[in-house]
Image (cartoon, rainbow, N blue to C red; front, side, top):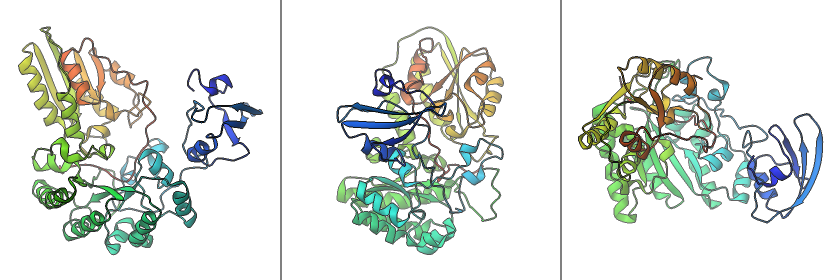
Length: 449
């Protein structure tokens, strides 16, 4: 609850529930937002002790209540009924916390937080509500426009109706971002060509297309064969997509179709320049993270310091070469600075999973203990649950810090990284303002062993 808010004046407390707003029973934050748009409000509150209270107040039309909710969907998250052959949730380790095993396919979370949905679980009432409230843009997992291939990948006949469902959204004026989890030999090649062609024709309502490589952890038990990309096949995908990028940019000065950073890192090629990312519409999906990181690094004027400093920077194996290159740049500027960039093998999920955001506290503790004597250690903030200092394996940041006498600080952006390298003594990462993390289950990222 925010201080000086209406909620604070009403003395609402953590654990209280809002049952009705002006006699309406909101199903989710969307309903609640519309209901609270009125200037005269009457709330039925159920307190944590079970006591109910009716409170009435007046407010400005744009004034917010000032509270945060445990979940955006008060009637429960719509869970996915598909059995996608590449589903990352099915590949997580057993006995992890329950929230990591929730497969959401809820259009409300797509609208509110950018979670990807398949459209297979939408009812007629859902389509009508999306149109009535104009819930736009949405984020949609396409994977393949070909109905047979998509049905095979999602393991449901409803997946074959993707064209009709996109048509219905467009008829309602809804815009949407799309993604393809690309599986070598399954939905690449000619299938991918058809997917890009069809979605590019759906512009401007189709806002962007992200293509990310399939990820496979060591915990996968699904017998369906999934083939990952190697250096040569990644280069083939890049060449195919670049032809479309050039074609679309000639027409609209936008790139539209983007590849996940992993393709470029696998192929040993530079990621595209910043202008090619159209303002980074799918940054949370791993599209342009590397370029954004480098741009953030370049935006910071480093501190001038001659103080000797020994640092270690831990990262996933995919991004480690980029961090090493930036660290070498800073070390050339500061001869008294020593930075060891450590590519941390993901033993928890398997070595083929190589992004920093999926590193666990246990693997980071092992890496820290293997370090020589250093003054400070930088770790990827993306590996921490937003809003909490806890990793995917429930190891806490405090436990990690106790594993070393050196000060350990999270780093999220390129600006963070440069500030930490140029003036570590002053660098402190404040995570108190972050919002809660929403697990997205539709895609995974990896490179071959």
